Length: 131
Image (cartoon, rainbow, N blue to C red; front, side):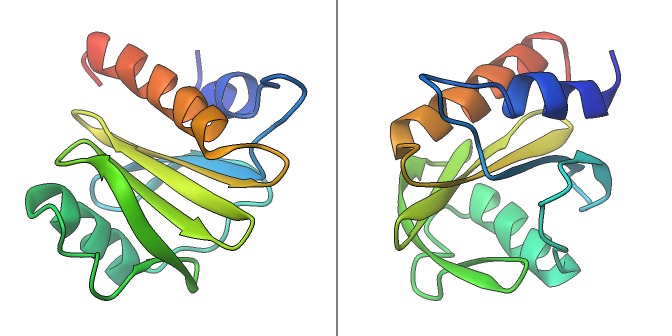
């Protein structure tokens, strides 16, 4: 299965009629493995800050999480594994696997919990597969 198929069929799947606004799978170096059409152009320094927060949980909290120039307030995640951000009626969930980071961006009426479930379910699967 291609990385694009994981984005199209797993990350952008409907959950209770709701879908992520945008999604991507990137390498730890920020290289895009696959992304949805609506996924923002991320900057290398944004990916560096995200990877740093996985190594030093809480490092993004004072400054916020930036993705494609959009600032998200960092909310509770799982240190070293999941970073969650909120901005107005939407937000982002980012999960680190062995080789990749999975990013899901949502807007209401999708809930944070639905976004978390979609991103983390694929993340758990990829970890099991060695990715």
